[in-house]
Image (cartoon, rainbow, N blue to C red):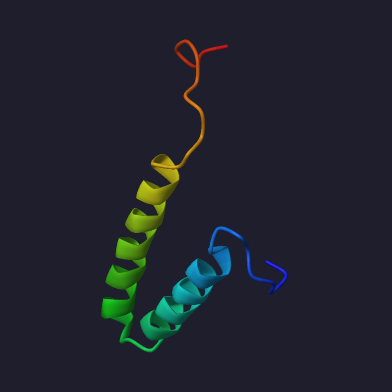
Length: 61
């Protein structure tokens, strides 16, 4: 996040996200709320589908 390009294209993704946020901010309130909800869902899905290694067991400690 220091402005330098990342090897995995992270800065392009960041620029795309910032651009999308600017578009959302320019919308009327009702549309903005729906757009943020959609964006949240998309980002949550990307996190859930991330490349984290699978956990062992049930997750209970």
